[in-house]
Length: 201
Image: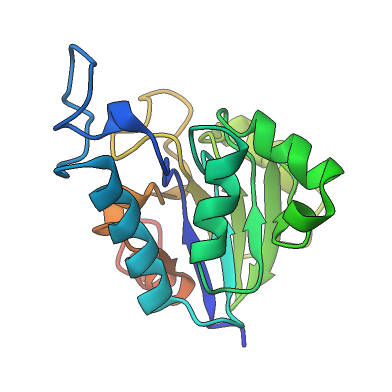
């Protein structure tokens, strides 16, 4: 069951300005190349459903949707997996409030800590929306019996842009923003493979 863990971030369902063809942003360098918002939404939903089975574990590292409560439920209901574990992003205030107050929404999402740590496949994973600085990771892992256990940090928010130069160099990191993996969620086994092929091994 451990190998059925998938992770993605920043789907931005319903977000007009992130779609290059309809964006009103002056700088469209960070936009996604879709012909419409609907095409982006449908592509992400289709890719998740074709990759993740109903009983798998799926983590979303934040920034679920734009457009209010209707879009929160609309796109959640289109995804087949039973539960999505959400690590809140900077655009998820409404969703977090609904998870805490609306039983229907609460039954569809599992609200996680802003920084979630777990161990599987012999690795320690640190999940967050924003990238976590090395010194903060040091404090979070202080006192744990780590020995030589591989440590893998997975975040969203960056949308494929590079990590800051200072304070983000000592740990292996993966930006799981959905556009960094051809709009597919990452299988945790593929992330471990990336680690094993990296300079951090």
